[in-house]
Length: 449
Image: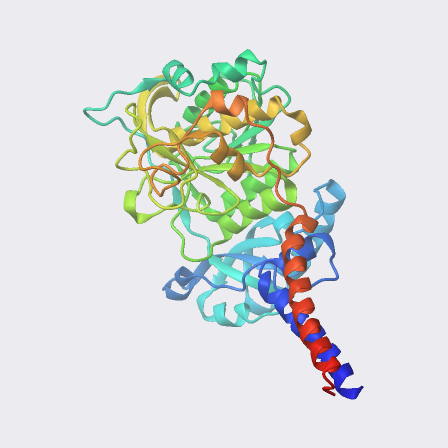
């Protein structure tokens, strides 16, 4: 029976190998639920090209630190634990590599600061450093009117989006906390206004005022939170935006709009942070796809966990500026809205993204049971969007125009649980084992030993 025992061991080994290879995301799924599983890293060990090619003597960097983000739902106790871990590692990096930290996001296990260029490779090899990204400057341009375009009033947008169907059900955003991460809050309104660097939360640029105007008109009963990450010139560091996401999580926000973004390669820390906020903490993020046309979708809209919103015009055609690539849905990009206290004509996916975020907030107010569950916002948006040419999901308009009428009839779609993720792999594993065991039994019956 020696050969039989060896066959059993071989079956087990083959089954385990098949199980792991069949489910490349298994490591993430298991470590979310069971910390003792360590199949694969949670965050890609990466260093972006910008860090490698810079000629600056001191490089502004964003680093994910080991052991990575906190997976528990955030509380002050958990945040305090994360902060102590990040601070302890930062102090060691300061001592060993002359690192100069200037911003922390403990919940994500992130620190940003100045690093001597000659120390980059050494820091990248440090066991406490998972990844290094360039802390680039993100600039949101002023949205200007363009000749030959008819700009829609927000009242027209509301009518075209059929939001009134949800309003008719009493779904106007009640009980939903929606934040926008931008240049601040209008000085003329009393809302929850926060900032990441202890600066005035008031908008001195105008972009944030526009986003607020759209959200407040489309989701009039929602609790709106402004999180300022951009200065009076529309500039902000990547780490400021990441810190803004963390502020949203810690303040119990349900929905976030990000009418901003940055070009990125195969991996970037902003998309990673946005994904973590959605996957671990249930914060649903909507982001502008970008205004760079064929150059592709910007970060964080490019993340698989973020709803990427492109722009269409009054004729339901994709605008020339709307980024092509990873697009989930679209809104109207040419609108007439508030800009520093005055109504102005504005064009950009920055105008479209808050429309989708506000509509989702209205839907969420009609499904309060979904607030504490992991809604698959990408699938939900796809289900509730009206297809636009070309047929089917595409790189121009995604699933189409998000419709309030369809959204009002759409039931919650939840992300699969751990056991649902494992169902198919277990079935495949069982099939492999049964096939091999069947062959073994046949051979044994024929006298093979």
